[in-house]
Length: 600
Image (cartoon, helix red, strand yellow):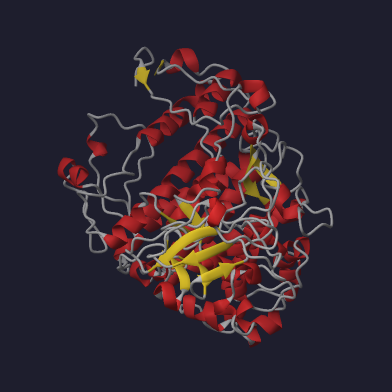
């Protein structure tokens, strides 16, 4: 490539939406001459910052693809399971423009007149971004063309076949190894440094190792162990560094929530990578999820998630007599404290209300509200200036524990140094290796039938712990995919349980707040409504079967009661096909070497 030729490189800047502490928000011009631009560390910094790509507070809405939430949103996997998907209807995702920008940097960064360690730091960040790009592509398509250099539209190399998954992942791991050894720990606020890169390295290795172990269609089971070894070893390096620890002040009823409602997480010892926001500095703040997570539409936590949390004494909810008929106030009695810091509980009071909030019921809604990500304030500046913890040390501990358990090498000491630190923060009893393996949870065993062997019980409990600790932070869908648990998505999310028509307490004080009436009932005006012992009129809802002209749908209708029904369209998850996506039809026409796999 001639030095005097201008190279067009479209730099896509995914903004951190106004970071604190002077985050560099400049980015390169769309037309860059390598000979003129790649001269100094400032140039390298400017380009790399243009590649910045990390989640913000919108991640609190990312579990809509999983069994953690019911959703009315246009979610791809739900559309696939309820429709007739094809390569002509699933067309998003096949884009390599970001990769071109990354490779362009890697081909030119050496021109800068700086020391090699500085070059290596920025090359490490670029290779980290390339690995992250390709990991997302592997998750979606499995085999995918590997482009190691900038490809122009006229290059014949553009029209290549899929590169086998194993080869692509080997290249991903090589990129992450380089990045983990060369990216500096000291970086500008809100950007990934050494420990964030290493956490992502461990995350990728765990994902692929577990995926290969439980997905026979890949025929890569024999290579799973090496990846799990990598995940455990990298996680252990982070742990051994002593740079992070679980945030706790000894208050299990609030410490967990601090991670999700703080104005400044820059000094929180658990936060490895933070997306900082400050409306006072920039005028542009975090994405406000309040209206979504505390409305009566779009998304709502599922009863299945609610029932996953243990009792406060460490026993299972299913061990409680009649637990399937527990009403809303009963469900929150003596549960893992993280549950009340994740999901709105009976008696929760919003800042704009003078009295406890009464759950709003509606069609296609479970009745539960999400607290994680909700900022309990009417001050828009406070709401918009709440930081988002992109990577938490808790994930590192869970990665180490899961890798060790899947390798069959986990010890009680391992549990005490990982999972039990999370339980201690929540005031929960420790997980016992012997007890877990002696008496595996039968409900979890049914959910994950692929798990077997001497460590079945502890693997299942680590999966529970991961679901609970990382709930509604966007991890669940990927977990279900790598665990070969896509079939769990066929269960339509259900909501609160109501025995039938009648009056119900929703705030936990034993006094009725709402009343369910049949479809033929005329809702009276406030002056004629039934009032409770506090003199407040009850909130009326008409109830019936799905499709009736009512406010809420009950599983067994108005007389039979049951859980709230969110939808009834049957779902199917075709294995292994739906673990992957087809190459868009247009791409296969442009490049005849691209073929479909796994039934697409």
